[in-house]
Image (cartoon, rainbow, N blue to C red):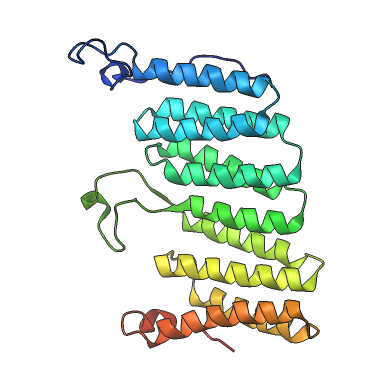
Length: 279
């Protein structure tokens, strides 16, 4: 698909937004509307993409999307991210460039807090689909795991356990079923990775992600999943030959187990973590 310098969609009430370059002493109306600034950025980044600088253009589109979201221009933010997706699909063939781009996409979507669910859901679904199509299996596992965070987004100013209506009314998205689906898919991919040390390390990374969502209270992530994964990691480590790679994995795994033990001992979290079996 060809990138076209089409103007970003118009937002309701946008002319009331702060503009750039106020005339005279600053008491008059803005010389440029916010929408005009975003339109210029859209055209400039499109030109950069057309000049064979696809990775740079993709990053710039994502930065513009975050700026548009922060100023509550939701439709324009969506357009910028969509253009980044077009570049990813049409211009990025190198697997390392794709991994870097996906990391930036995930970061951008996590930093955008004003999308409605009807807009946010297709964006995060498409990003996860990109991750599942990466060339290398370890990259697939890691990036799908990263995408998991897109399906459990808390409000930036919301403390754990706080009622959502009392924390500013900003949009957030939580879908525990899809969190679990992503983690299970990553686990299956990690299990088929050929290098034993690599896939055991992926298992430990996944264990930490399961713990993250377990701690946040995602109801689909139960202590049974954690206990089963810990048992699987113990089994695989036992089958590894003595090596530096094994020692590194064991140290990483032990740090994770130590964290769980601390949670078991803490009065605030002992009831939640006690059912997790470590052996």
